[in-house]
Image (cartoon, rainbow, N blue to C red; front, side, top):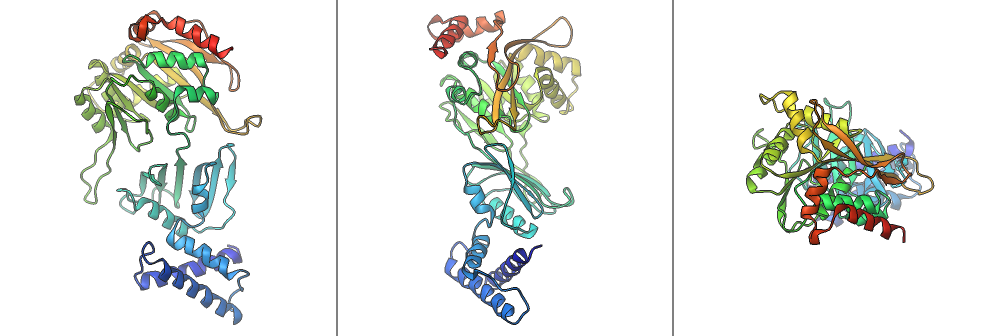
Length: 428
């Protein structure tokens, strides 16, 4: 640890001890907290004059820095206030972050693990979540719902390990994604059409590829008369719903009871007459409840971590089998193969120097259908050869999907005519 960091940590701990000794409340007694910080700085400077410490070059700046730590989010405060920061990573005393260019950068201000843990506890204070020996891992919505915090401490992690993800795009429609280059006008028109009926759409991609943003854009396209029930482990979606609601899991209480999991939520909303169930990030037994949604005639949208359409189906099947129900893999695969209409695959790259930003784009829109074997069939409708290349319509439109879309489209509009019109408008 550098002398600069050592002085800061010494003064910070002294000030915190004074605040705790006097039982001050930083939110209400800011002036008294400031007095304690100034007292800690003066005591440090007094020891420095005696040769016990290295003197501070700017005592006033140190007061402000320690005060920010004691009453706010310390060195992370300015970082979290920046709009160009997408994710913050804390590993013990080290803090790094990803900005909108996709570059990983280090925090210039030195921090300590103890201080970083204090910041995490302060962020969690406004939630019902805890991080302690009983619950050594936690996920929570923080910063007034603008970020997702995922954290672990020993014995699960070897030290404090935190990822704080900012919701950089919260309320974008399909047209906005066209403007950002995520997909083309034709693909947006196609996806809009498929959301006019009770379609089953899976959004797949790696972490950070923009799955939740695309899912939000799809929700914008749902007819206002449709009842939409959204279930998430940590709420990220924020699209206004005229008919429907959002639901979030609840962790167990201090006595270990009262937990409501994602599977519980999906099972619950099935009894609320939904036209469409939305599940953010399917990873476990909640996938099995989606097979019940199929039997109930519900549409659904969900996101999964997968590298392609076949991987997405495999991910859903494997997650559904985790429910432990007396159902074979063959049956579950058959249900998903017959039920799912589309898999929308997203990709990202960390180097787009010509754009100056992290690039996220739809790489493929694939129709899923039953086949003669137990494996579902896959028919690409839109394909992008590589990120940065055009997303092109293959000319394929499955008959069943086309018929369902045209029954739902206003004014008897045909899906092919919709795509042709979108293409013509895009080339003007």
